[in-house]
Image 1: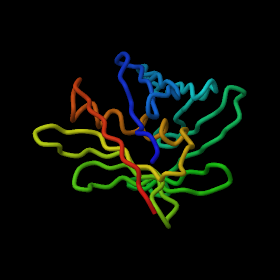
Image 2: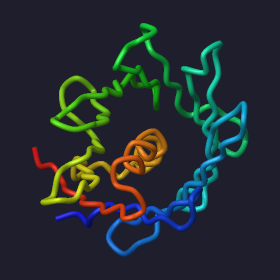
Image 3: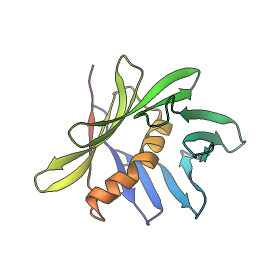
Length: 168
């Protein structure tokens, strides 16, 4: 069985990502009046995420050399689905209510990774589900970057994370 994936809040803008007890990296949110983005440090590799386009609805992740490693864009303006171009593959990022907010990365055959809100008694917790063989943590950083505002809004400062592994 694979270890749990967890995010730990360090400051308002900084989060630590752990798999089991192993530190994988940090995500630092960068918000200004006109721009939003983040810096990812994943096992010593630096990445940045930036938004572009007229409505800033497209995004890309670049490595420290400026090479684009992932692109995200919606086919339609008000779509709940985003196409991800990553490692010569097209994936889909879908936003669903299941029954609460859920962000899922899928290849249309199976869900690779999902971050969702779940009721745990009187608390709302963030649930992380991943395929056991998924050890590509860049996708975790992308999903947390996108999902974190929803988790923060619904759970407040007492964010609780529950990580599960999906078996095939």
